[in-house]
Length: 122
Image 1 (cartoon, one colour):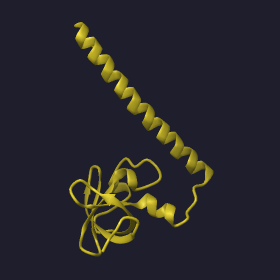
Image 2 (spheres, rainbow, N blue to C red):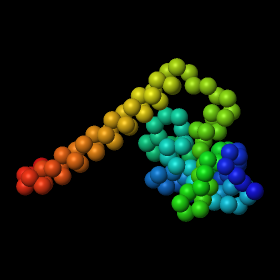
Image 3 (cartoon, one colour):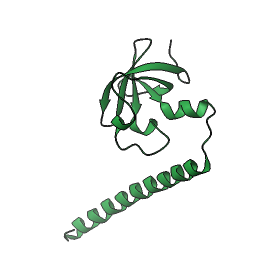
């Protein structure tokens, strides 16, 4: 029986825009979200995973549709792999950039709403 925290072997059955669908050795379905593939920014899933590829991942939860949610990043952390300073800096930058972009989008959305209420055009 698979449970959260387990490290499992699985095979990639489908590549999607947002991750990879996998089949666990137990026959159950799993999903690796694009954000859980590598410790750096992943633009295209295909650059990291291929259909038919076997991967070892850590179970981190369940998705809304009942698949096991897996992480290749968490597996790397649990194996005791340490980030070097250059990688850590890039990861911190990417987190800050993602936070900035999210905040910027929110502010622009609020600005547009205010302008529409005033009858102005954006």
